[in-house]
Length: 274
Image (tube, rainbow, N blue to C red; front, side, top):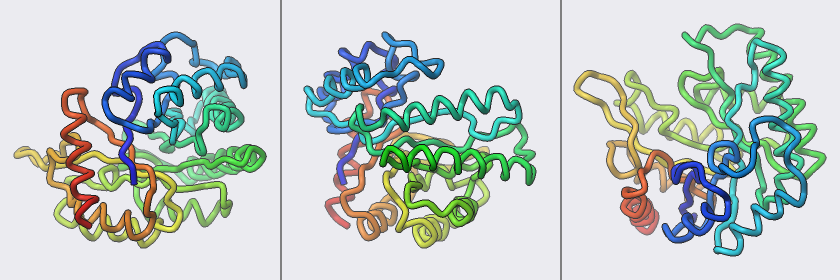
């Protein structure tokens, strides 16, 4: 299990500057969200990517010994505005078509969320239809759709993600596991149970992992920090990750640049013990 990082934690940069910066920071792979991390190409609308552009970006990272383990796609996948949803689906499908030219095996996303969390059966049905459409594209190109459950989103728990996987039974869907996204102020005291449940339900489908940390504030709110600065049970997380998916790519989140080396060393240290 090698530890990589979200590319946009370095800011939005020209890709020829971003690749060496990632390498200089000691990471061998990244999750690359094009419109968050790259400043010299406009990725805000579908239609700008070509095999040549994807190869140019991928080759620049490869030149510096960095692979693109995940293409990140931060879009709302069941938006109730159909025009916006179609645009988001098209952006995701474009990434699926060109993922292999970037050197990435997957395109990953959370489902999206509505203010107030007022989800309906129709929202679920729309998300299912969206996923079926994305999977059809992924199967054509031999890449994965990576789905991540996140508290507050339509799919916010491990059981909800397991349900969606059962309803859209394609081997081209995988799970991006992130226990930090499954924890809340209400369940934090039961975090071991939540983490273990996630692996029991989703462990065999994991294709990538995220790493951040959580802890309870005195106010009772749950805060998010980089790995090693919180109170999440990383011993359990890394033990289960190694048990279910040895050598899976881990992508570090939340870290400021000055925290990256320490956080990576923390994760590597635990991985060496479990």
